[in-house]
Length: 432
Ligand code: GDP
Image (cartoon, rainbow, N blue to C red):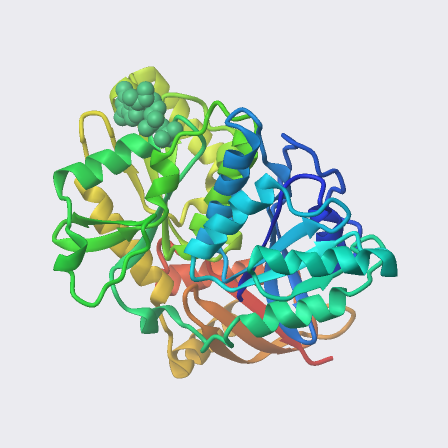
């Protein structure tokens, strides 16, 4: 799905426009500096075309100066988006901050659509027309508040994105895309330095690769990997008040671009809710997962005892992920990440033939049929692997299946076929 980022300085009405596009009042309508929000991207649909809408409105800090902060926001949005929806305020006209964004947008090759917002009546149409001077092409007059003009705007946005050829990961080729993710201070940048420092790969040495300036190539165990958004890891913006929001937006973008995520957890500290949230995010995004327990050098026997219990209690849901106990500081086991990445990627890419799958489903149904419900016996008629990356199975059944039974099928699929390091999805298509 193409990603559309909504960019613009505070108070131009980005969130209102996002709400308007989504057709619901879900996004926060506040458009003020430093608001921290969890939700940053939304699934949207226009005329049957699906896209992801990223609202960059929530993070912003004037610590670095407004224009610089906005330019940085724009840069981030550009790095992750397929198209940018740039919002300006037609009642105010063009400001220095707007110009700062335009400079960043110009440097990028991404399509930009200009929305002149707050055109609530004819009177403001003239103002909108002056926005031609930004040099971004035709300004679309809209009123996010009243819904005016948003249809034409969306047409323009979606027309600006080339209809992507259905990109499957095998076809992309090139080094595997790996994201290092985790909450702040767990050692992501230390790990990155360790990986990149020891075996730096010069981009031009790997033929046929164009690497985003935010990515880096590293070699682990003779295999070259593309680390996603290393600029985001290296660039520390901790002081900025919008940091938390910024970090979550970046994390999400990195997860979405990656094939395999290395989730870095600080082994010396209790597993936290934030860790669990990021893990859920990875799973929901359908990415392969490796868990790296870092700062192992700081753990003693007692801490390791408690960590084991935390893993049993909190990380059960991800016990399919390979784990490596590392120290980014000493370099311990960092080289083992290569094998773990390969394992997870293999699980993620696995394809099961329809024959094998149905033989498995036959055995499963015979040994452990779905419980009879109101006199009927829901049966699995036929199954097929709808896709891989991650493995996703469509099962055609006579009647609805209980969630517990579906989870049982998932468990058995893992027992028989592995899928180590990958989420597995089972979809039931019930014929009532
Ligand atoms: P990030 O925010 O996830 O990128 O974390 P950093 O890489 O900046 O690390 C945060 C702090 O933890 C720094 O002071 C690092 O030196 C320290 N650190 C990172 N990895 C390790 C490790 O394996 N062992 C120890 N003892 N300290 C570590």
